[in-house]
Length: 352
Image (cartoon, rainbow, N blue to C red):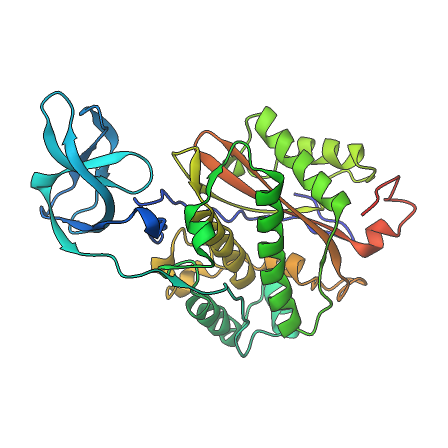
């Protein structure tokens, strides 16, 4: 992707792979209100998962792994006893598992994003330029570990646990909540670097919605990288004279269900943000101690306006949106720099 004097382009894509309740390289993200207990796979090998009809699904359970379950009943024509695991109507036969424990009460806490000691603007700039120091990588590893909302069994509220989000049609309130949630985290980290906060704006919110619509109607996802033609069309339709992707950072995750709880969704947004901030390219939490997974800080350069340009230290106008195609949920973090808004060359009617 080409760069310019105000490049906010993202070269590498952060791609979180998550199936709620059947986490592949991630953490369990299941609404506690539905959990009755945990079952653990008994066999050394993987065992088949089933649909409620009693037919095989396309997935297997992980050997010796514990899964939260929400129901136990007899499924299919053969009436085989099975446990429902996760939120996606997967069932595992009772003969293949044993109950290991009951769920503990849900803990509620506000998600935080804190930069560790050693994560500085000067060190970030070196990393952005492809020259991360050993100390900065150490700080990034610490940041992935200490910012733990995405992997702990906690929620921000009981309402988040109970709220089911349709990934194909989020309500204005749900988008508003996720915009405020993600912006709060970004600004907490920016504050640690003594940077001015980004500002939520109606204009950028509309731009974010239009970009998500471009992805949806053209069946594009994060797997296709940035859908630049759609981003350009959305920018032009919103009064921005931009000829490439200078507004979008993106994260994403697999989700085979059309719905998930707000808690699950917030955890995925949180994980995507901390991947971008700390340069982590692993697909899940398990690899957070592996130095080889810390490779790319261009996202962080965008989020912290630290790119070695004349506009370092500026702030952006912010909006957030989601698109969901082919079982992939793409998270669109959209920001427009203040100097672009103030530019007669680039601003042809955009109103933040």
